[in-house]
Length: 341
Image 1: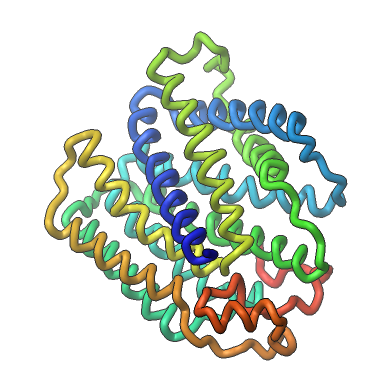
Image 2: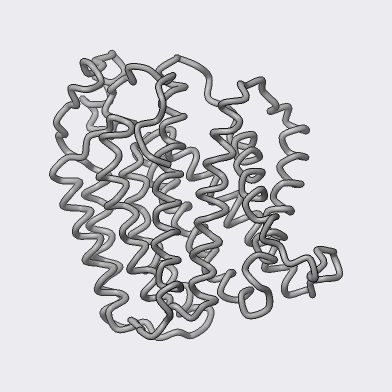
């Protein structure tokens, strides 16, 4: 049952996230990046304030945890999207951006054991390499060169922000588990993270462009609402649920499916060419993600104590279900995060 749930959440995440790139591609022609993201996250913030209040999802938390969640938001909502969309705006091709973004799963896997004690098995490393090969196949014939050096740095900044933010997000979830605390409501987490994104975006706003209802036409409003409720609220809520159940490496591996899924949607919506190489790349990416999501046997980490052999973990293993993590309790969650932010 859990495996089916993970499969459904994973597919929904890929579909929602990739649809955000399609909507952004449509919107970038009409709006600049900062105005687009500011309007998007102001809509998200208002919607979340209403939903958290109506559903009574407010919770007491420390100032430190609030600031950490806002830091996650500034990285995975603010800097990541601003850098990636700005790369498109500066003329970097979608193929090149997609290729650079494949560094995210590899970088996440490399840092995950050190930061969160989540070991990566040989099978998962094979899946990550297969996924990278898939993206190379799908973007090889769309590679463009000629953008400025500064523009080419933007996708790398996006990768770094998304990786660090994902690791910090997972670290906070593991701390709640280690302390046997009830996890915070997803909507409250998204509210704090959206606030963090706006704190990054607001200082960059062009004051000459008003943010009022009549600033945007009907088509732009449709795109903004899709980006706010589907690509932001929907995709990031599913991402949060996935990070509560599986390791950061396994979640990051889903990123290999996003560029091919985006290409399929672009073919259906814009009539973009979908070659045999693209179809083959999607198939190879699926194989890579399968290898990462079914990790096999990973060597236990000695840095986090003995593996937790709880009855529930034993039952899941006996049934062949994927464990939500390597059952390595954190030694402490009060120590500083072992990564340079």
